Image (cartoon, rainbow, N blue to C red; front, side, top):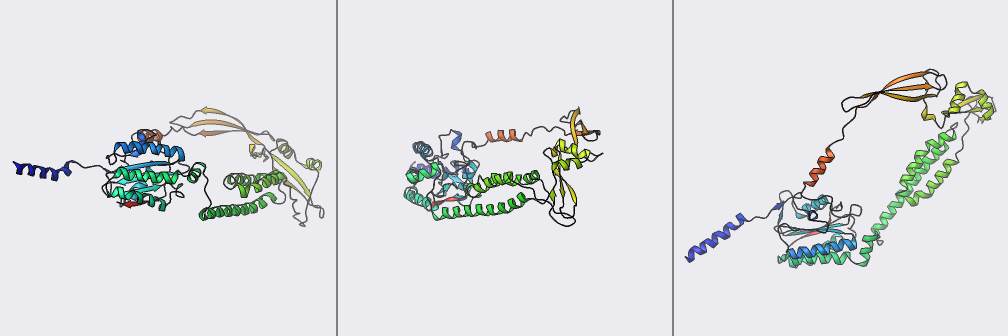
Amino acid sequence: MKKLSQLFVLISLICAPLFTSAAVYTVETVPSPKVQGQEFYVCNPDTVLALTTVQELNERLQELEKNTSVEMAIVAVYAYDEHKYAVARDFALELFNYWGIGNAQTNTGILVFLAKESREVEIITGSGIEGIMTDLVCGEILDEALPDLSQNDFDAGMLQIMKGVENRLMSTENRSELLLGWKPKDPENSAIAAGYFGFGFILLLIFGLVAYKKLNGVPGQSVKEIQDQSKSTQSCLGCLMVFFPIPLLFFYLYYVIARRRVKMIPPNCKKCNHTMVELPKEEENSRLSKNQLIEKNLQSCDYSLWKCPVCGEEEFIQHKGVKYNKYSNCPVCGAHTYQNVGGVVMANATYTSSGKRLDSYCCKACGHHEQVTVVIPQKVRPSSSYSSSSSSGHSSSHSSGSWGGGHSSGGGAGRRF
């Protein structure tokens, strides 16, 4: 009877692993703690950690985020997919970015990942916190926890890692940096600042050359034409000033004033190449044709009359008026007085067919009328991809909107225990 009992115990020990096997996780199947609520940070699906430890960690992690704005996740699993990932670091980094741990703007997230079967532990840091949680600091924190982890005391080991992170992040200096975005000067930051100002002044030089060309224009250009061609440069300067305010601010203000004070450059005589002189507006108006006067009154075009003081050669120069874009050239008389005066919809566009509109055009100079049939594009139904992606997001194993949307470039450290 005693031998039978011993045989039964031996068979039970041999067969036990066949009936009890923990899950092997992929990045997609690791359950996100955020599905339980915003105050949950610990993933412990295989009960590697005691429930009391998980509760304590969640409370401390919530307090850490409140005081430092650092979002930290802890994941403890039995095993991960070692066929796809050679080491736990690759798995943890992909999990970090898959969940999006940490604030999307500051990228101050941290992930602690522990795999019990392969006896690996990793700390992954967001790209915005690597200045505080350097690879060396992460390695020191893990080294402090290795004695407990090597003895399979995962609760004590994880609490020690939590303590190490708190000690580094909760210091007065580091809290100021995390909450206010302030950083003490160091050689790396000095190099970044030098590069910033250097690039800003290179932009200043480039825009200086472009502005000189745009503001001077060519001989015969009107003030409005010069101002119009330099408008895009001013807009581009305004956009770049957001990123480089110090190097570009004063130049931007100068450019705005310079555009208002643009002067016309007199053209050269085509016969003798001498500088021409603009004749008075009264004499210019008396020499304009009927169509040119109409263009001037409509402000579609403007004219200037120039005369060479040496040889007496005269030249009319046409300029774009304030309302130049509202008109086009008439197909009959050629004057820039042709305008769309309205349209009538003949057939509305539907989701199955295009529509038609009858536009009327009229020339303000010669009175020419014309009607043109315009095709109205067929309507397009809104794409259903958004709704399908939204529904698929709800069925995912994690809530992608609960984490902050941060990103990691691979900073951190790892150990085997």
